[in-house]
Image (cartoon, rainbow, N blue to C red; front, side, top):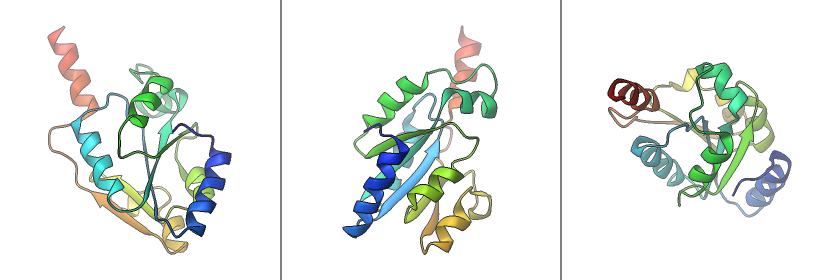
Length: 155
């Protein structure tokens, strides 16, 4: 479900009161592929509720360049929200999800294998709150950049 950060903060408070484990991850998820699906499925298994912080179009452009995203934030939110592993999707316009992580206070912060716990934005915040930070290995050969490059060479 696509939800505002204010309402999601209230939902998280209720989930914590019910002793539910909240898992959070974030990303652009521009061209969804099997690596993303595998990653999100693995993340969901770590807790009761999986929240996706999804970069807005403006945020993606600042991070990835003027030609990105390929798909709009609305389209990306609809597609990622349709995955059975995903419980909530929340947009963020900042360059990093730190503000969102601080607000939501997840129990588990997850990122892909191209990160280390030391390089994950918000890791110190989650750890300070008694949570954990987990790195999930990437699926070899699966990336949005590779898909874009392949599409450009075959056109």
